Length: 319
Image 1: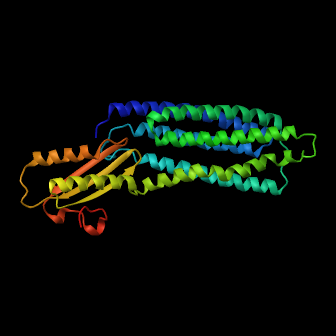
Image 2: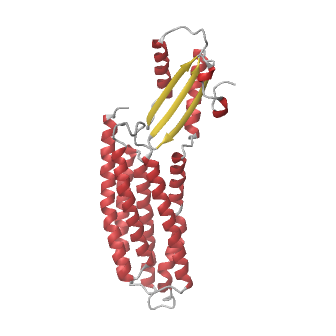
Image 3: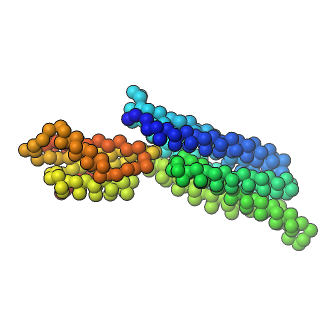
């Protein structure tokens, strides 16, 4: 399959968005770890580690975004789209484990009565990072309306998660400062682990959803909507063209759709290769446009032996 110029332009735009995200993520990661160690805040250290892991995953995603724009070769004859769900699965799995680890440490901190935190530095860090995370989220969300990239979408969710963490830290540290000198001053000691313990379970939602979607593609589980669409189109075409039977196989891997159709024709069918090619064109048109790259294979036969065995195919046309 040759490279689509419009797809190449979209890929370049995707790479720019991920590149900008990577640069800011590195800054946030370094700043978070340094400020967390100085202020003694577990939550800020967690934020820095979260950003550091996200930076590594973004760098991988950036490379994948370049790969999927390349043409097929002898080693990767079906393209590079399968790398995308692998990266998404790895990224979301790592973020899930990090959130679980943060929750366990936060609970341990609460049990031990909390710890002293340099609230002034923590407040400044949280404010600056909140602004940066929200700005990057808005930028990526705006850009992804045209790109419709799963890689950018997952990275965007990472920025949203980081922004939520930073805003929660900002509110928590600000409240702890306001309570100084009051009978609630003891809240300052547990503010850091408390906000982390409350946020970590909520932050699991995004990575778990992303992991579920990515692993479905890694295991090549057919999307129900795609399967229904292909079968509805083939049912209509078969009834008008007189096909005896058909078998369909569909799946989605990254930004590529793979659709294989095996059509059984009457043994006395008339017409040559030109008419069969016209039927292929008609089926392709009937399937309509897709935002993904579509690999369509249409095979015609008059011998049922060349159809896929029914024991392998739950998606046959007529029974």
